[in-house]
Length: 409
Image (cartoon, rainbow, N blue to C red):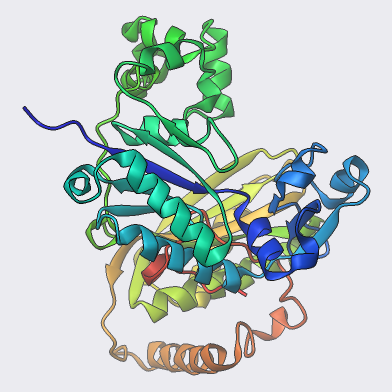
């Protein structure tokens, strides 16, 4: 009989804010909010002292100040966070090589094979907590369960600095009254659709007829039914074993909502250059270009188009993105804009055959060399001069190394 898996989900508590409080003792014990450097920005994260006043991630600065007049705003230092995150993941790997980075402040660990060395999953959790607290002065919440779905659910149950274990014996009771919105993978839209069916708790979701869920959600209906019962067979996939990255993209929340075509083109070009530069660094090229748009009411959608061939040339990415955007009838101003290339293939480092293509490649290479040495947009397109101030945030897909390791400031 196969041994039951032991999965840990480790979630750093108020990570960015906690790092800032440790770096500056004057901020400790005070309500702080980490924000971007752009003119219009939102709360990236906030300390638990700020959360006590109702301040939340995603709230704009003005609204947060209304809720907490003594709130201290701190401009985020992404390089500091990525360095700390990488060191914390290295600590985790000392207890098991099976570490899957989920985001900059979260990871899944498969500790099934480590019990003979450390005794129990709870002991592993306590050891990791102690190491992180001693080395960085930071706390984390840890969930222990037989699978990733339940481990992540468990890590959210006691915050901050919590430790929760879900077993096959206590899981049914926990799920019976647990709101479906607490399950990772069920967003607001799906939650509303399930509520329309009278489903509000995981227990109700697990008992609901799967055939009706399949008619409503297609094959996803089966997965939803399994989630309601706490079933999840997904493995923990370490970085070196993870599937090949399928896209390169970047998005930015704009300083203000924009509808002027010239401004939109300017931001689109900036994003295309960022995507092209990163693709060239890792020698990949994409055939499909995708544009993502978010309106002020947070309605978000994407449109894509495949090119005749693969490219990592910024101007070609821009032209394809512009064509896509011009085919969209914008109903509101734009709050967020994103560009992505996918359907990737490796691009060998050699000059193109035709003179025009060679000139483009050499120009891009020269720009990359200068920007790599002196920083993003030290050399850029003339139309971008004076427009380097988009909100540069860490992507949810960030990884500590490789193609997902987006340059941060």
